[in-house]
Image (tube, rainbow, N blue to C red):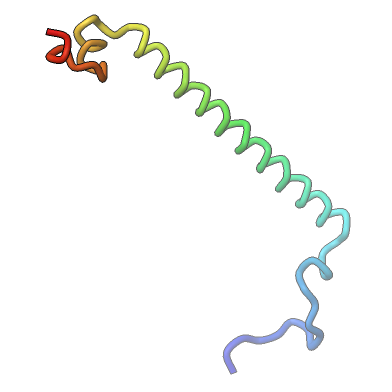
Length: 75
């Protein structure tokens, strides 16, 4: 029992829809993918710039603490 079938034929949704509508939906899908990629790229660039800005504004003490050099070796 369960689900009722609209048609006895096994047609996919794509086959039942108007071809123009299918094309319009696939175009919209591609457009949304491109927008998402662009948004991710912008976010990546923003994080890179923020990291560079933080690095440029570090104090001498922060730079010294981040340094891998051990001043005890040079005493």
